[in-house]
Length: 109
Image (cartoon, rainbow, N blue to C red; front, side, top):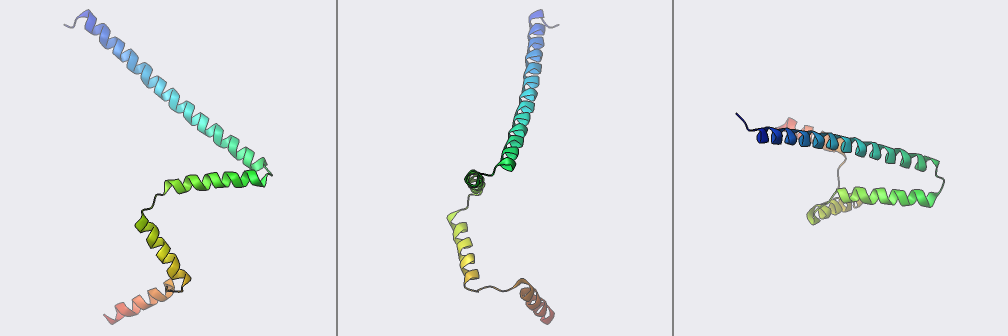
C-alpha cells in the first residue's frame, strides 16, 4: 500500500506534466499563428509596394538566406566552376546526342 505522501506526489507530477503538455501545445499554436500572420503581413506589404528599392532589398535578403542554407565544400565549388567553364568553352555534348551514341555503343556489344 502506497503512502499518502507518495500518492499526493504522483498526483502532483501528473498535474505538472499535464500543465506542461497543455502549455507546450499552446506555445506551438501561438508560434504557428504568429508565423502565419507574419507571412500574410509580408505578402500583403510586398503586393502593395511600388518601391523598387524596398523590393530589391527584400529580394537580396531572401537570396542571401537561401544561399546560407546550401554550404558547399571547396571541392564542390571547384567542380561546379569547372563544369561552368567547360560549358563556356563548348566542351560538352548535347543530351540527345549522348543518348544516341550510348544506344549505338550498346547495340555493338
